[in-house]
Length: 480
Image 1 (cartoon, rainbow, N blue to C red):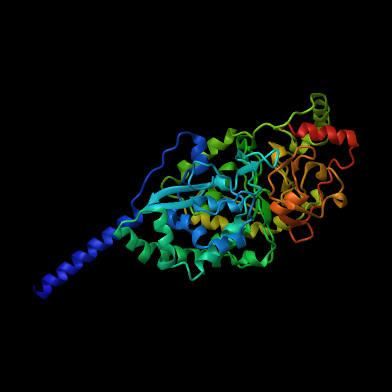
Image 2: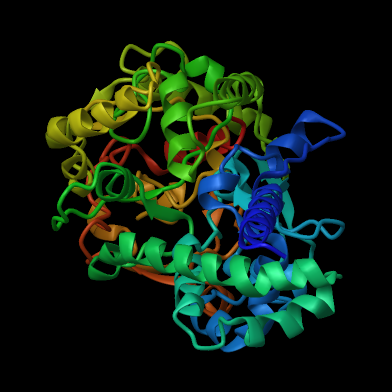
């Protein structure tokens, strides 16, 4: 064979190899759902290219690294460490017939890849008694969800010497059938690339280790885009903030949104949040965002799951109208506005995290990407939100520093200094979740209000009410 023919064959083989690798990397798939709620729970937001982890790898991680899982997870009762369900040890909502918890999407891009969606942080898990199965309130705050623990687990695994083909493939092949070419691709490409991507992500988020822990139900909502997307220099701000509810967002048209009023429209909230998950603003980005905004516009919380006293509720409605509706009622004169920190008196750290200069940097990023509907602004105070499903929004205030509504109606000095958050059994009397006692301590995260960003002061509204009026108000709030 001549040298020219040999070169021709080598080039042809290389082209075929590149075509095969490209097909493996980018061949797509679609998702079909029985209804819109299933799409909310398990649908892709389009982040597979940037943030997708091959499903066989993601599924195998808890079994390859059970020691790291136990070190970083908040292990609740019944946590299953086998297969994908092991991730429920991070307080995630799980349905028995699904391979992964609510909030994880599996979609093919080259291979089946796992990404997150809104339902991960916006599904509330609750129980009336410790013995019953968890109930799910879709669109509510994921107060049990330990996002920081889950990230720490992934990053620790990526730096562990077991994260290699020899360490991963035996477990992967116990759970997934791979042919010879697929096995070779996992050994040579998917496993090394996933490990590298997780290490890079860990470096980008290493600043979180220098700040107070988020704990379940929270993240550092605006330091994440500030440090990661805009690459702003690290500073000492602490923006730890509870996941909000997404219920009936259509009623908040014209309001400021996010805890500090950083967005002026629901569209901007959704677009910037999608970018934060790794979804690129091309292709079906706008269509998915429009669908999500439409779905959330009327999504409602479940009704309070215990009996209420009609007479007491009626009296509480009068108290609410006199003392609360101006800021928290539909159409209240200050509802949807940012109340200055000096007035509301709550912990200022979140507001200090994202100021005008930070918003300008973020807006330059989104403008460069061609996003004309994601403009943010500096925090102005704390937004007075309409109280939709407030009985499921515990712990209270933007930073989750007050365990129950009864505690919120007490003077700040009488509110608990230390309590446990992340336990999912309701306290139907005080209105919140059980936050003290053996069960809460065994299943929750120790929350200390003396740490930076965790202050429980301020919001003194209603603390002077007479005890019967407070009781009536609590009864009324159960019905919202």
